[in-house]
Image (tube, rainbow, N blue to C red):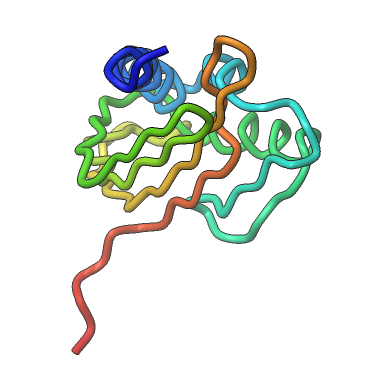
Length: 139
């Protein structure tokens, strides 16, 4: 497989990742779960704080976190991306408006996000996600 083909496949995956992110911020974690490795190697530093390791813990956290969202539109603004035959990473800002579950008003959402993916067979799978609120630089 050529470098061009690998990069093209990964960018096609990122388009599906954006669809999964939209679903997540509309209360549906299932597409995210499908794009994650289901092994003990998966880790996350979630947008609500803390950390999780292993598929069972991460899966539970995805379900919990996505249920906090009722409706929203969030776009990933990719800042950096690097792809090899076996692994890839992205650095992005996820920005948009989300209506939390049980609320009537939308609120702005801005997260700084680093994600690491690996190739499993012919698929790309998330192996680590670090997301936290984007805040103003503290001087």
